[in-house]
Length: 122
Image (cartoon, rainbow, N blue to C red; front, side, top):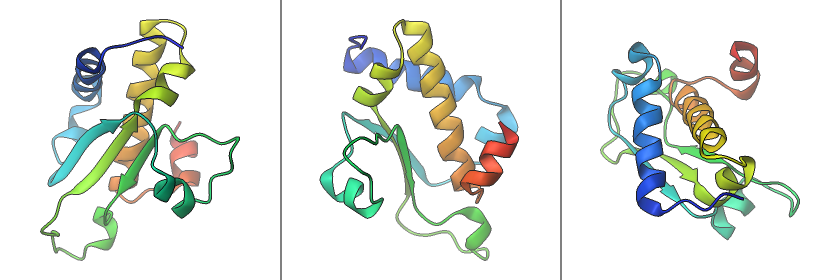
């Protein structure tokens, strides 16, 4: 696991957001993008994760494809999980790529894509 300060991790998230295709990012509205060290026990339980499974990121909200033109008052939320992402890479560049990939994956959920559709695009 590579050790990254909170400030550097936030910088990597900001950089990743800036590197994603502009058309995907510029249409994101009312979405908080943040990070936590690890998923909460409630999140793990809600997703039915086993002890040997990890979670790199999580989209929580109503996907655009299901809103029927209505924007929720509370923002949707994309959470990136710092510790699991830092375990995925041995170098800063590897962690940077994991963050970028995970952020793209969660933004795809925001647009309404399911896991099969995301994997087909990858």
